[in-house]
Image 1 (tube, rainbow, N blue to C red):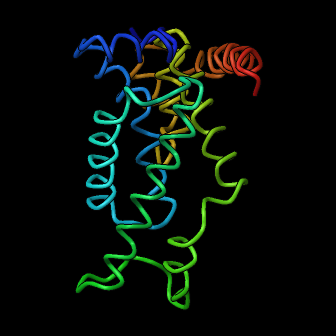
Image 2: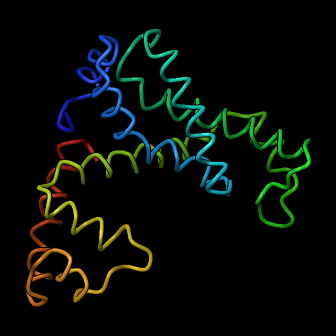
Length: 189
C-alpha cells in the first residue's frame, strides 16, 4: 500500500478498508505534526492537534472534491487547528510555548491564512518525505539516519545499524542520494 497514490488510498478509505486508513495517516503524519511544531507548540500538544486533524479527516474525507487537494486541505485544517489551540492557550490558563517578545503571534496566526511561502515549504517537505519513502528500504533507512536524526548518526554507528562496512557508507550514500534526486525530479521538485 505504501506505493499507492493518493487517489487509490482515498478510494480504499472510502470503501472502508482499515489498512488504507493506516496507510493514509502514515503517509501524512509527519506533514500534519510538522505544522504545530513550526509554531512552537509543545510536542504533547502537537499530538493532540494531530489527533483532531485525523478525526476531521475521517469525518470529512468523503466530502473532498479533488484528491489532488488532499495535501493542501491537510495543511489548511492543521493550521486552523493549531491556531485555535494557540488562541485557547492565550485565553486559558496554560502558557503558550513561544519566544519572548512575540505577543502578537497568536492574533496574527489566528486571523490570517498561512503565508504562501509557508504552504510551499510544507508541500516541499512532504514531497521529500514521499520521495524518501520510494527509495529501496536500505537507502531510505540510510537517508533517514543520516539526515533526519539530530544529531546525525556517525558513520560507524550507521554502518553497524545497517550491517555495512564503515568504508562503504560514503559510496552507498552517494548512490542513494542520486536515486533520491531522480525520484525528486520525477515528482516535480
